[in-house]
Image 1: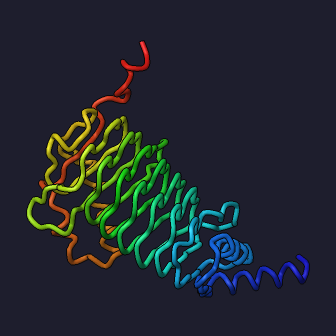
Image 2: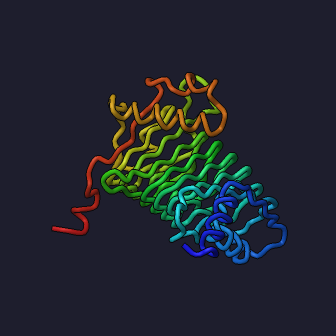
Image 3: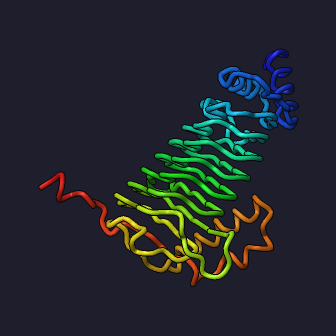
Length: 272
C-alpha cells in the first residue's frame, strides 16, 4: 500500500466518525446534493443539514458509494419533493415536514419524518422503511411491491387521505391513528386500496365498507402478522421517543387488516 493510499484511508476513517454540518440557506438543490455526494465519496458518513427549504432529491444520488448504508443525514427544515427517491441504503431523518413523493421507488434504507408527509409517499417503494410521526397526504403507498424477503414498510402515526394503498402489489403499511383514544374511526380517507392486488394495510381504528375499494377485504390480523405489527410499532415508538405510549398503541382488538381479495382484480376486464 502506497503512503498516499494509507493516508487517504486514515483521512476517510477520521471523517466517517465526524458529523459534517452544512447550511442549505439559498443553496440550489443540485449543488447541495453534489456537495453531500462528494463528501460521502471522501469518507463522510454523518451529516446535519440545516435551513433546508424545499431542496429536492435529498439522499437520492448516493448510489455506488461504499458502505452507503452507514450514511446518516439529519435534515432540519422542510425538504422538497422526491426526498430519498431511488434511495439504496442511507438513513434520512427529517426534523420538520416532508413534501410529496418521499421515498419514491426506494430500494432500501430508512426515512424518518418527525412531522407530516405529503402526497404519494412511498410510490413504487420496493424495500426499506419509512416512519412518519404525524399525518400523510393522498395516494400514499401506491404501486408498492415486494420480492422474496424484500418487503417495504411504512408506519404512519396519524391518518391518511384518499386513494391510500391504490394499486398496491406488495409490502405493508401500518396506520396508528394515534391521536385518538378508544376505537377511533378513520374519517379522512376514501377509496382505500382501490385496485389493490397484494400486500397488507393494518389500520388501528374502525373502517367503514364505503371507504374501501371493491377489491379489498377486511379481516383481523393473523398471529404472524401481529408479530410484524408489534415489531414495527416498537420501532416507531423508539425512533420518536414514544415508548410510554407503546402499550396503548398495541391493543390487538383495535387493528384491522386490509388485503386484496384477488391477485388479478381486473383480470376479466383485460384478459380472457
